[in-house]
Amino acid sequence: MIERAINVKLKKAEVIWVYTDVEPLSFNRGYFSVDMKFFVCVTLEVFCGVCNPVIVHGLTTYDKRVILYGSEGSSKVFSSKCSDVAENWKKTNLPNVAVEVVEPVALSARIAESDCCDCCCDCCCDCGSNNGNGCGCGCCPFPADICQCFGGDLVVDDDARQVLVTYGLFFIVRLERDTQLLIDAVDFCIPTQECPSATEESPCALFNEIRFPIDQFFPPQKPRENTCCNNSCGCC
Image 1 (cartoon, helix red, strand yellow):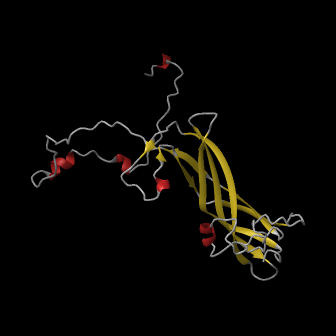
Image 2 (cartoon, one colour):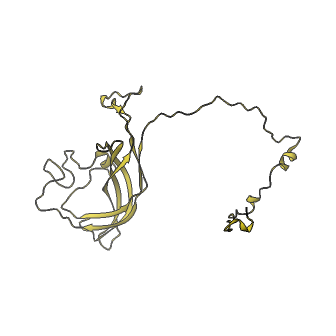
């Protein structure tokens, strides 16, 4: 479809997964390097002629590395809710990374000719088969869970024309750590005074004590600023 396209339009972009990896910095204690890979599903309108555009879905990735402070900690953590897998037993109090991201802003898309050399280096799979749809040996360059979002393996062909998309990302990265806090606690407080309430004997008396809600009838006004330069004008 892209080979016969004369123009493309980026219609929508959606983040489907963010892979994160946290590693401590050896030259600066307490700081951690956070590597992120964003998997973004893009929806394109492909124009092949005078007919209506065809909707095509694709996958793009974006890599980002940040350095954040997460304090120090080297203790081992054991819990009663343990797993049967031995690899999950080893838990520490190292911080965990959390990424909050909003939907990307679709900016532009254009068709680019392939700049792959004629040597056919078979960089998509180590088995030497590069047919564009995967070799069938499970060597897809993308995780299997990501491919399931598209209903199968993605078409990867370096010799074909490519679509270059541009989108904007807004995200927040933070390090989270379980800590122990001391919070003052007191016993249950039992009220000793009775709160007045409206009774059948004196409902009007209670109503008369309520202040008239002037602000509900008039919009709030901006308070006047003090324009006095000194205390000689008599302002206090």
